[in-house]
Picture 1 (cartoon, one colour):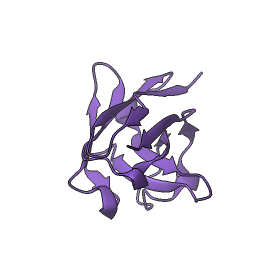
Picture 2 (cartoon, rainbow, N blue to C red):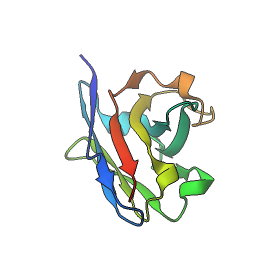
Picture 3 (spheres, one colour):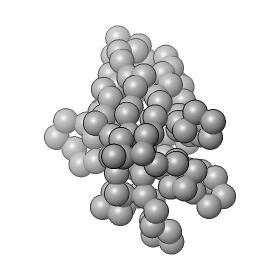
Picture 4 (cartoon, rainbow, N blue to C red):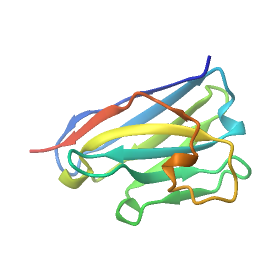
Length: 125
């Protein structure tokens, strides 16, 4: 049974940092493209970052470039999202997702096969 489990969310002041983790069981993360998505109340789910399975190339939403970094630890079968300089507009539930599909925009959430349960990130003073 495939499971993706996110952790690391919480409440942080503006300018602070958090590191989210996405731990996988039942699949090898290196064989999948892993995406981080977020959904704020009343808004649609949006892609935040992605690490491609074939070559590890990374992608970011424009509004998080330079602040967020995605990485993976093969030995721990875990993908991370380091989030620095957090802003109130980063507040959302963050999800990790996995897919095998290739050659399709990483932003298309419908192409992801497996999803975690989400972790809440709140940036507020």
